[in-house]
Figure 1: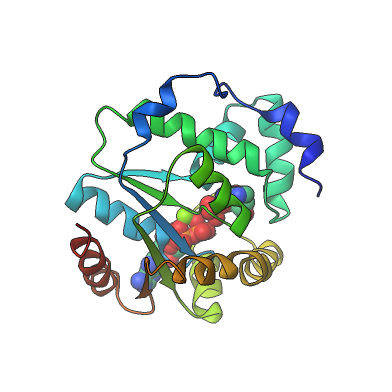
Figure 2: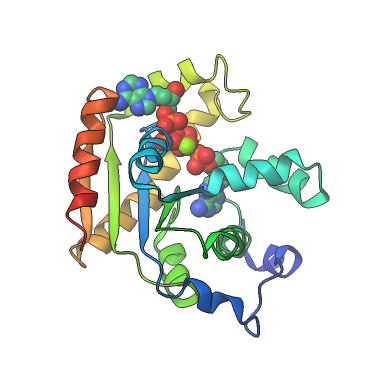
Length: 213
Ligand SMILES: Nc1ncnc2c1ncn2[C@H]1C[C@H](O)[C@@H](COP(=O)(O)OP(=O)(O)OP(=O)(O)O)O1
Ligand SMILES: Nc1ncnc2c1ncn2[C@H]1C[C@H](O)[C@@H](COP(=O)(O)O)O1
Ligand SMILES: [Mg+2]
């Protein structure tokens, strides 16, 4: 879908004249990138418990908007149900607003599920700042499908079904994997083997975070 037609309609409260973005310009930022069902949210919860970072999942922020019942939420739901990406401006403004709201108390931010494409990373850096680390949560596609089908038994997520999972996976390989290559060039990518048990995956995550200055 063309993003231009939606961006004006869906812009949120932040704008260039807003002084508040200064509050987050020096924040420690970790991007958490991986396929659907790779275990990003699971690991982020553990990082919050151990390191006290703030976890912001773009998918969770979008689902909260859907749950609000707003007109915008209805439009977002239609896109997410199809396993497509919502417009960049919408998701970036949501993340930025959430970061500003937590800036005074946050030790650092885990940005889970963003960037989904290289352009999202570039825009994030222009409007917010550069990530110190990218955690690449890696699992096989068969593993991800199995986990999502199981999660779908109880999650209530409209996109945890066979047809949408396939679309989300295809989009991940096409649009999101290039994000990893892009940040590898900066030397900030740590690949995490998410085929292991949750605590063993977390041991790798902890090592990557402990390596941060
Ligand atoms: N290492 C693991 N071993 C077994 N199950 C796991 C592991 N990590 C996560 N899970 C389970 C928990 C969930 O039911 C499911 C998906 O994990 P989750 O953390 O929600 O993935 P995710 O956040 O990457 O998915 P999405 O992109 O769809 O939000 O798999
Ligand atoms: N960063 C994002 N850009 C566009 N669309 C997004 C982003 N994060 C989440 N979404 C939409 C599209 C996804 O299929 C759903 C669910 O996201 P998830 O990270 O799996 O919770 O939301
Ligand atoms: Mg998740």
